[in-house]
Image (cartoon, rainbow, N blue to C red; front, side, top):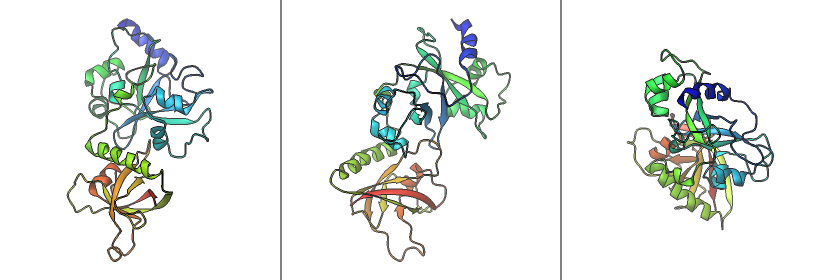
Length: 286
C-alpha cells in the first residue's frame, strides 16, 4: 500500500480552490483535500466551502463543534445569511491529523491534509512547531532533496478521517483559554435577560507589568462583575474572542485619550496584541 501513496498523492494534491467541500450527502468526500492554515495563535484551521444542501448545524456537528462556536469563529455568519459557496473557518485539533497512514488506510476513508507554505515559514518550523513530526519524514513524503521551501508550495503533512471529528478531540487550548471559555458561558447567560451592545475603539494594556493569568477589564458601560467579549478584528483567520470580567470603570484622569477598554496582560496575550493600544470590538450587556 505504501508504494501506492505517491500515486495517490498525485491524484489528490491539487491547489486550494473555491470549489465546494463535500456534497449534499457528505461533508467530506474522497476527492477532497484539507488545506490547513495556521492563525496568529498557532491554531490550525481550514476553509470548508459549503455545498448545496449542507447546513451550518450539520456542519458543526460533523466537525465536533457547537453552532455557537462556528458563529464565534466566523464573524458575520448567521443562521439566516449563509449560502452555498460560503467559506466557513473550521479549527482542526492536532489529534484529528494523522501524521502517518493507519494500518487500515484507504483513500475512500481518509482525505489528505496539506499545508501551503506562507512567507516567513521555514521547513523546521512547519515540521516541529506546526505539525510535530521529524524533518526527514516530511521531506521524504514530499520528495524534497533539501529543506529549501518557497511560499505557495504545497506540503502533504498527513491524513484525516472523512467521517468527521469527534467532539472529544476538541480539548481546551491551555489554562487561559479554559478560563476564557468558562467566562464565555457566563457571558451567554447574561444575554438571556439583558441587551447586548457593540462598541468599537481602542484597547489599552500596561506592557510594563509582568504577565499574569487574570482575565479582567476596566470598562465604563458594562456593570461591575459582568462579562464582556473582546475581539481583535485585525487578526487573520478565525477570530477567537476573549471573555473578561469587568472589575470597574476606567479612571477619568488616567489617559489623555481614554480607550474603550483597559485589559489585563493575559487578555492582551490571548488577543495577540503587540502594541499597548490597538483596535478592538467589545460586546457587553446591560
